[in-house]
Length: 88
Image (cartoon, rainbow, N blue to C red; front, side, top):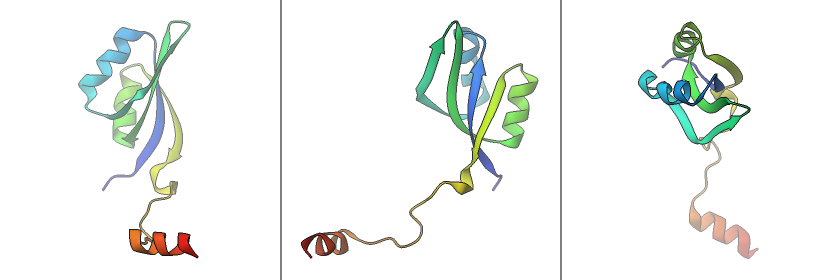
């Protein structure tokens, strides 16, 4: 699986922001913002996708490697364990 990165994609206007739909990216719609005519949206993309965006004229700010964010892979406990710990 390709490395993925949390990014902020900056678009010059709303039209360019909407055009991002054609790139088939993992973008987080609730994060879309517009300020002073410029738009931005957060997403999770690969380096190949980042390159395509830059080639298309978008600015991309890499925020963090996805592997650095904590995931619930280790030390997972079930609901019963949680309730028991709360009763102590």
